[in-house]
Length: 302
Image (cartoon, rainbow, N blue to C red; front, side, top):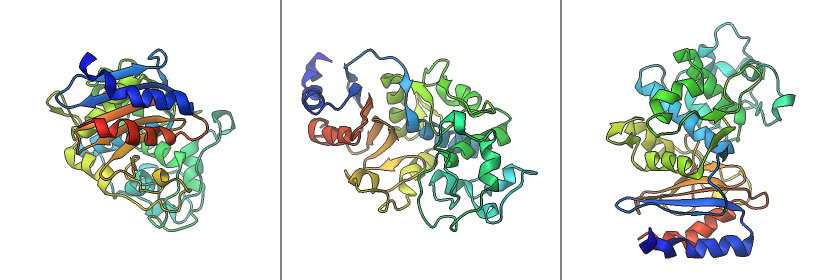
């Protein structure tokens, strides 16, 4: 790691000069030892919407196990729950791409949330056809988590422990839960920077870890190639480059990322065979952390 000490010098200076709020940065490059710099202890922190990518991987694993298909109707997993007209045509893929057309987004704090988020979502009339428009939605991801429970009999976290968390050596993962006790799925998973970095490395490796395929490779590929348009989603170019299966495309060609509120990122660089992972607390412009990576780290990845 000493030979690579200058790899993060520019990022460290940028973090200080622009007050970017980084907690830590971790760089994985195939064929190299990892390089990491801590701005504070590597404690577990809320990775916010970085949680969504773990939920998407659960869907990919379940599909590989023959428990579901991406074009299945969501309502079919919730038999007997009152469903508004139009919701019956929304598919699992629509939830993954956040283009369901259902306006119930569930961004409220848990204390203000309905008791059963899934029932509320199903009862809410869609405002547009599925697949027509991307609209960022915590409820879409939460519904994916509930589908995992419906097909497996286990809640999302229980399902992922032997299939993903244990192989990645993420012990006793803590995940905030909804009023009914299910993992929030869209948010609330707590990880260290180095634990989040293992997710990025798994994605770089096409779902393989230590010689074992944890997630089907074709699904991991589709996560960042089956992309919907987000050009209407704000003014920042990093938010308008496209959205896949609970991951974002980036402005750098071929690069895609796990992305959580306040600057929780695990960024996949396929051409460089590298992953850059950051945890942070930046309430102003967290996407500036990405630009610091493009300017200060990417040119040194080789």
